[in-house]
Length: 338
Image (cartoon, rainbow, N blue to C red; front, side):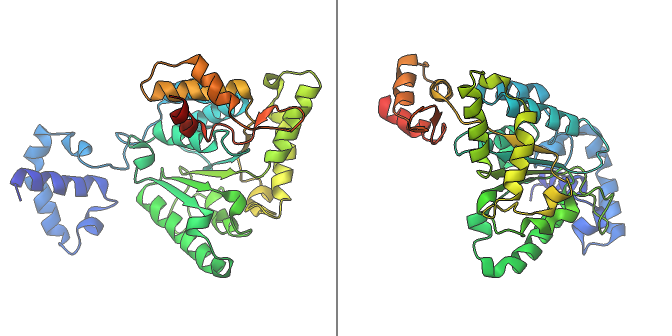
């Protein structure tokens, strides 16, 4: 191997690993120290070069771009004034705290296509330099990772090991649990100790980690409250978190088909925010179509956007107020009209 590349590789190992002796065993400590000393001149000349060769759990790779997150929420997420405000404040407050008392735990709820996955991606993109491709962002889905009820005890043990191992590797890890409404009840309780206010568990601190739960559970109560506002002649932008948070947490806690059914995470108040995603109206679907055209490098065409929005199915049958699938099918429908 080229000596220059060998030096950079060794430097990366030394800088990005948790400890010198652990990272390069079975090389002895004395040899490692000697090798590091021999590279002092290289370090002096190329002080920061090793940070750019491979993702590290360091500020160069993990930092909050608050402006970027705010702009993404304003320009790409439609019809979600409550969620946008909560996400920005919660993430900003957590990331600006050098010594948080517990991990950040967000539970995102609403019908399909309302923006839950989209928001989790925005958060990752504005914290990790590699975004969703970061080795410090981990996604679990119920049907892929935990399919069999008969193996729930195995899943609990595996989940604990996965989280402990990844947080040991990088304290600022992010864990996204999709399809919480399809997860076996009781499984998520296995990670309760990691969401508590403990300073350390078995020598590992989880306080700088972020946990995000995504679920369709609670969608009915969110939709009903939004519909009641409309029937009362009130604008949806008048809806506040206080109008939804209690009824949402209760409906999720008591939903036997939800992975959060009677969970101690709710019972012990370990979820920092229950974030409601409102059902989307025609105007929001049209905005999604316009944004998709822009993302493809096309000139946004309002006429095409209206065609796409008209082609979407709305509910309830009498009022036809809300899109059944939100903006989920917009990309494929846009292919048809362009």
